[in-house]
Each structure stands twice: as structure tokens, then as C-alpha cells.
Length: 171
Image (cartoon, rainbow, N blue to C red; front, side, top):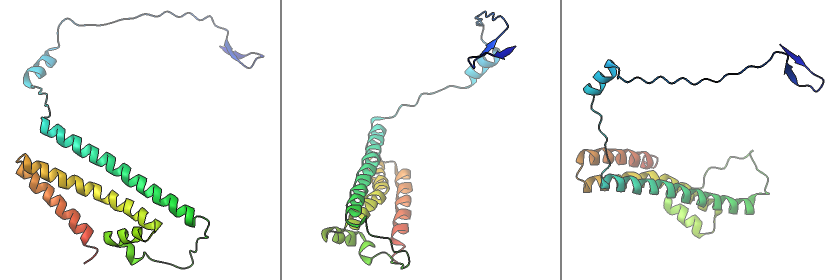
């Protein structure tokens, strides 16, 4: 039974007897079902070839550094934008669409050349969009070098789908 003492601590009035015991059951014989499963199924360890390791290494570095570069470009552009326009009041009464300058990669480069901070942010977003596309292109090239043509066809279909989704907005 527990009771509250004057120091606001719970104490027990029963004596505590604790005995620790360890019991380990190890069978000398394997279970017949386990032996049957081990005989029926052969487990193979699949090792990656050097080409597969190279592909995985290239693609992981592309994704890692591509996203980091894109993030830093967007952060840099955002900081510059806030330095120049951070204290301006927002005018939500008037809708202003995106400038046609920012609707194409060439326009974004022209905006950066003219000193636009929004152009730097847009460039970071373009880099972020380009990273998965580059991943597909590199995969396609490496599969072609390895002569794995079924994967070449699949990656070309993915590339065609990505290209259609990007260019479909213009036409």
C-alpha cells in the first residue's frame, strides 16, 4: 500500500523483496519445420557490380548536390529580395500575375542579367526542376553503355513524359 508522506513523496509500507532470475532456453535440436524451410529455400546474396555502384554513386551525388545548390540559390535570391523589398507593404487588393520575363529559362537568365532578385529565386527553382531530369538522362546514358536496352526504353519513356509535361504548358 502506498501513502503520501510530508515531503510529497510516495512511499510504500510493504517490504520490497526482489529476486532476479535469468532463464535461457536453448534447444540442441533444430525444429523440423525450420529445417524443412531451410532446405526448400535457398537464400542468395546479391552483390552490386561495379557499374551499378558507379550509377548509384553518380545519381546519389547528383541528387544530393543538385538539391543543395538549388536550395542555396533560392536562399540567396530570397535574402537579396528581402533586403530590397522586405519593408514594402503587401498589396493584396490588386492581382499581379507573373511577368512574362519569368516564364522561360531564357527570360530568367535575362532577368538575372538585369539585376532582378526574383530572377535568382526563379533560377534556383529551375535548377531544382532540372535535377530529376538530369537524373533520367544520366540513367538512360549509363543503361545504354551497359547495353540494358529494356531500361533504356523505360527511361526514354519517362524522359518523354517529363518533356511533355514541361513543354505542354507552352502549346
